[in-house]
Length: 92
Image 1 (cartoon, rainbow, N blue to C red):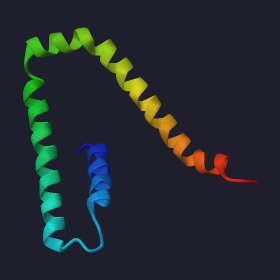
Image 2 (image 1 turned 90 degrees about the vertical axis):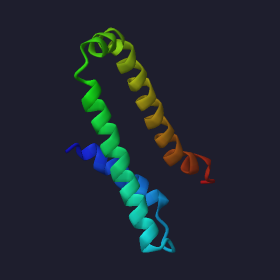
Image 3 (image 1 turned 180 degrees about the vertical axis):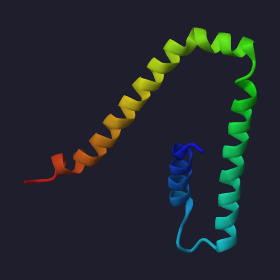
């Protein structure tokens, strides 16, 4: 029920989808994406109930959050650079 999952896989599908792709192949893409998300979510749900894993994860959570923040900032900077790059390099 996480909308981010749906948005991510919809965007991935849009990248993989081409106008010439047959409907059967598009259906396989959709089935694969649903299976991948369902499998991942079931795995996370199963692992979330293990006390030892929760303890280990809790010890490294600060580092994981900082790494994720740095990666998201780098992604944002890459997007901004890609959008501004052509305008900065274009002759006036």
